[in-house]
Length: 225
Image 1: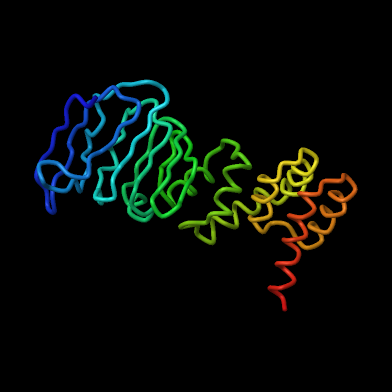
Image 2 (image 1 turned 30 degrees about the horizontal axis):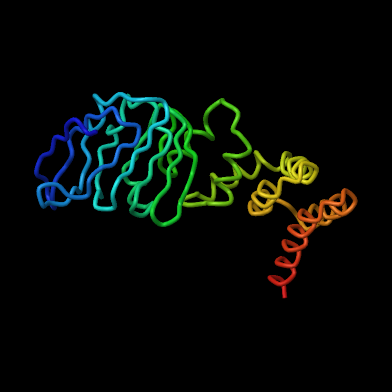
């Protein structure tokens, strides 16, 4: 149960300055006292402590938020913003845990702890860090290139080029169709790569993988006609 919600009047409605709760699922109200909740302040969850698997649901009425709103927030694993990603992107939030973001227009991405939950800031930060980038993160960005600059895309492509074919071969062996589809969606595989993978898939008797690769090749042929 929400213990306390503090608000102030702002242009267009109310800003939640602080929401204190120990619940694992935190739902921000869209209206309070007959007024829309349009903003989230810097101290939003500053005194809210809960478990290690917390969810935050933010209504589409919220169109402004302080970049510091999630400062020192622990245990947040999922943020569901019911508006569009462009609006969420403008919040420029960051958090100290790996956190999946889902928005009302169908966008979803697993942001990594310590990195901005916005683009291109996330790409800029992770590509200039000295930590190894996971292939899953790179594939997610290349297959869902929202606000991905040409420069950052090329950096991701260079990073993945030597890894893509072995990953695809492994997904065929493991019959991991979802990973294979994600790899193909990055468009890093050449036609020659796809033909080689098709041959491997047929030899291994992987019917589902073979179908996925054939579909990709047919799509390329149709696009060239």
